[in-house]
Image (cartoon, rainbow, N blue to C red):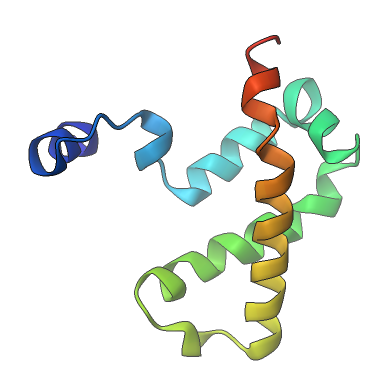
Length: 100
């Protein structure tokens, strides 16, 4: 539905990844941690990253709906750092995922 609406309203060809929720994205990462994603995260355990994913997921709605005041200053700083770290790691993944 979102994909069709984006095309209709904005003349943009969206993909499932464009309209997927952040929590669904993290579920995919968690479900495929061992066989795909761990290698992009220095083969670290999912436990090390779960808290980072969860904090970013919890911060999504307050940030998206312009209520950053719901987050403490330390949470905001951590979310920015974690999201930058995750984005940097995953920015190389799509090219390599095609080879998996």
